[in-house]
Amino acid sequence: MEFQENEKIRLVLMILTSLIIVGTIGYAYFLDVSILDALYMTVITISTVGYTEVGEMNDQAKIFSMLIIFIGLGTVGYGFTKVVSLFMEGTFRDTWRRKKMDRRIEELKDHYILCGAGETGQSVIDQFQKRNVPFVVIDQRERIVQSLMDDGVLVIQGDGTHEDSLEKANIKNAKGLISALSDDADNVFAVLTARQMNENLYIVSRAVERNSIEKLKKAGANNTISPNEIGGMRMASFVTRPAIISFLDIITRAGDVILDLEDVVICDQSSLKGQTLKEAKIPERTGLIVLALQKKGEPAPLLNPSYDEILEEGDAMIVLGQEEQVNSLRELGCDDGSRNPIKRLKK
Image (tube, rainbow, N blue to C red; front, top):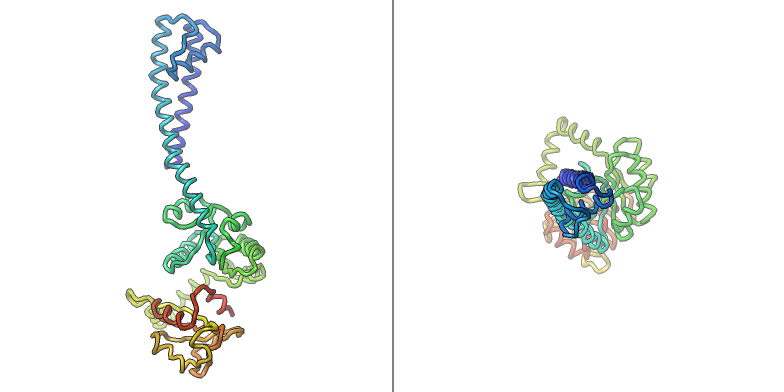
C-alpha cells in the first residue's frame, strides 16, 4: 500500500515537472521572451498568484495559459493532498507511535528481549502474551515490525547482533534474552554481544545445527534449544510412545483448564521454611503436585522428592497445577514470581 502511494507521488512530480518544461517552452514561443521570463510566467500561472504578465498576451498565449492553469491546478491539488495524507496518516502516525513505544521500552524492568520474530520467534511471542510477560522484540524486517506494532507488541526495528539495538531494548534492566535468529552465526554474535552488555542476563538461544550448541554456550548462552531436534524427537515419540505423549498433552491442556509446570522459591520470611514436605502439606493446602525439589546450590533437582526433605531458604519447588493454585503457593513461599525458573533448573 505504501509502495503504491509513493508511486502516485512520483507520477505527480513527473507530470508537474513536465508541465513546467512545456509551459516554459510554450511561453517563450508565444510571448517571444527569455527562458527565465517564460519560466516565471509558467510558475505564476500554475500557482495562480496573479502577478503581471511579462509580455503581451495574444490569443494563442491566453488559450495556452488556460490549459496550463487547468492541468496545473489539478496536478498540484492532487499532489498536495497525497503528500499531506501520507504525512499525517503514515509518517506522522508511525513517528508518534514509535516515540511512544520507545518511552514504554525505556520504562521496562525485569523484561525479556526477543531477537528475531520468525516462526520460532512468533511462538515465543504467543507464549509471552499468554503469560502476560513484559517483553520487547528486535527485528530488521519492516513488514514484521509494522505487523507487531499493529498488534500492540513493543518492537524495535534493528539488528539483534548490534549493541545499539540491544541498548534501545533496555538490555541493562532486562531479565532474559532469547536469540531466535535464523542463522547460527548471528545467534552466536547476538549472545556474545548481549552477555558483554549484561553479565547477569539469562540467555537462551536457538541452535539450528548441532555443532553450534557448544559455540553458543561458550559465547555466553545459559541454554540452547534446537527446534529441529525437539520436533524430530516429538514426532518419533508420537510413533513409538503415543500413549505417553497423549498423557502429557492431556495433563498440560485438559479442555479449558490449563496446567503448567511452575517453580516457587522459599524466601526467608516464608512460613514453609524449615518444614518438611510432609509438614508443609502442599497438595492438601493448594491442590498442587510437587514433582521436584531444586535444593539451593545443587546442580540438579530432586525428582519425586521424599516427604522428609526439609524446605530451606532459596529452595525451589517444581509443581504442576493451575495458575490460581500456584499463586496460593507463592504467597506461602513469599515468591512473587520475579525470579528466573529456567536458570535454576539448568543442568
